[in-house]
Image (cartoon, rainbow, N blue to C red):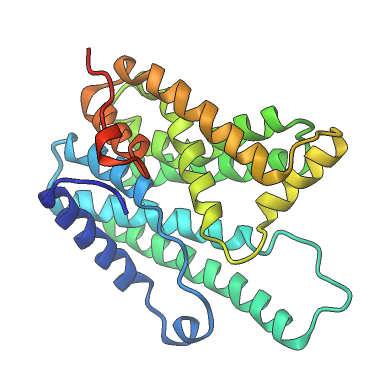
Length: 263
């Protein structure tokens, strides 16, 4: 749970409900787990569009659309694996439903984009989706070290946000947020009920690299290093994004540890 002021928590809760309402589809709801909705990315998008001087409805439509795109991409990721020779009928149906769910969320965001009639934003997001798919191919098939894996992962996870941000702010000022996206995605992995394709890919890289680290140890090490880099770079990013970043960095800390140097 993200630590926020009451007002911000209420706003995030409202956005979550709107996204969840858009996602509802009775058959999928009955047969598949609810997709992971990343509160950390939601917080950054809320921060971005809250500074953009846009009408409230337009802000909400942008945020809902981008989160649906992310969830569609994440859902499709769950089937990026070789079909098992001994796959059961239930496993096959589950895999097919996961593909269907990703397609359904994709259709939803295209519908919302069409309703927005915002050609520039449609173009920005379409380019971002293409870049994400290219980065995904590199991540799953071309990476040869854990360091390269995490570098591509952070860039890939931030692509939608940077595309959405580019009309409103110099994205160079937000470069340190790459580590924010690494942390966000690695936290997401903790919520999965079974090893994801991402987890399995990292395991393969570590094996090929003859690393002594387990996947969990490699992830924990990267989390620690990403937090250190992000903390160091807090003062180089715009204040509102630094404030959002502090909320991510403070997760899991005891109250007496919830202080980050301001000066």
